[in-house]
Image 1 (tube, rainbow, N blue to C red):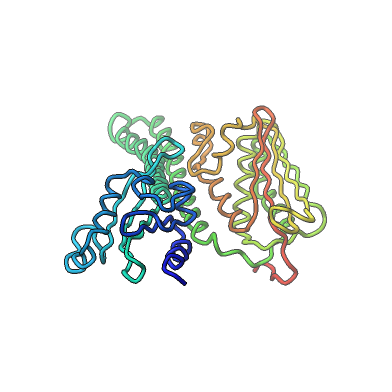
Image 2 (image 1 turned 90 degrees about the vertical axis):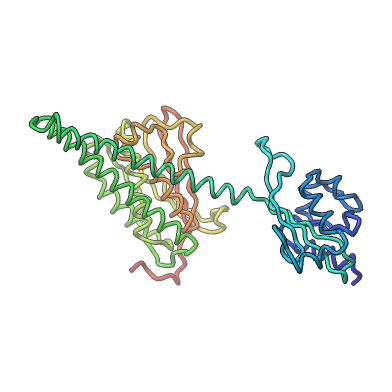
Length: 372
């Protein structure tokens, strides 16, 4: 294999955008990722015409300068690594209008391959996106905890001062303090639950769970809450068992969360329906499955909110959710548990027409053991 084919094969085998240039800084190879970034026909063109970034082009000139590799070996200097130079550079324009940043490394090619340099461009957007999610999560948790803590501090100060001898005020403040501490406790529990679910999301459950029995148990558990809210729960699971591979505790958490939400927020319709159906072949799951539909006849949800319902701390009505004890994490937990079970979650709602949450889960094989 000649040198040009060797370089081309090496560049194409790499998973990130890579361009090879010769000693004159003309492009001699580029993989598909680089072509998508810099243009479809980069070969035999000066690199400077593909990417007009002064820092990157200066780095290429420096790497291609006579004696650079030997000098770098004896004194790498800032950013040097065996003759390679690394920097962060803005390249092009993203769809949002912001310049996307890339980690760019320019490394010399060995003399056996004709010299020249390899330019590697790694998109930093995924890392920056993950960091932004982390910052948003920390900010949201801090806000959710700070609000009740601020209220508690205020009530404590009032009870020690103006309301010290006011029995009525004391009882009222203690009731509020109890409610706020319970909400903080639920928030911490949901955060721990979310962490556990995310850490085990790649481990698919292997035990068998009967959905019909599980849904019956959840409906019975939530019966008193539904009765208190004036809501009738209608359960239709059929007569046959509905076995799926699953984690019984996690699935119970999923259905408790969705049915409880239907009672709280869709209870104005006075009815919550739970229907279990068998699907002989579900295209998305490529096999037989079960669908569980939980519907209400309440106020419904505006379409603008539907894509974000499973985001952490996203609420359609923040004040109402907090009044009812919501933490804003329930549907995020549901999403991750359903993903762990290789299932699908679908949400359909229209304002004034109620809501319908459908979970589709793959059926179990006969070889899977029952849940212990």
